[in-house]
Image 1 (cartoon, rainbow, N blue to C red):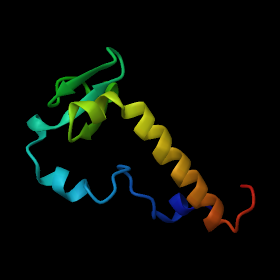
Image 2 (cartoon, one colour):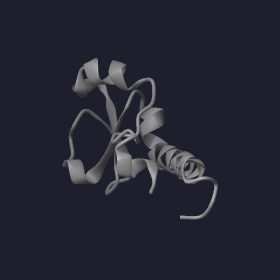
Image 3 (cartoon, helix red, strand yellow):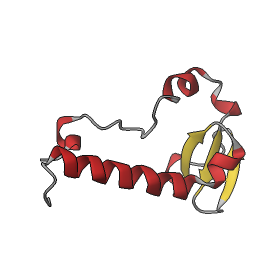
Length: 87
């Protein structure tokens, strides 16, 4: 079993900055539009076409890099959780 099977992985993928962003005005946060490949301030596009929110335009433009870094970290944590072996 992996950590996600127990609900231990944050669903949103956000770390320590998550609470601050949840309290922020959503129209001021940035999103990455996966269709246009552009950063957008506020919820301009349908949820299926955006990644985020991010606190800056630069972070939104780096959405795929951030996504891949988090994914790798979670995969490493899953391996540790499972005793270091393969799934």
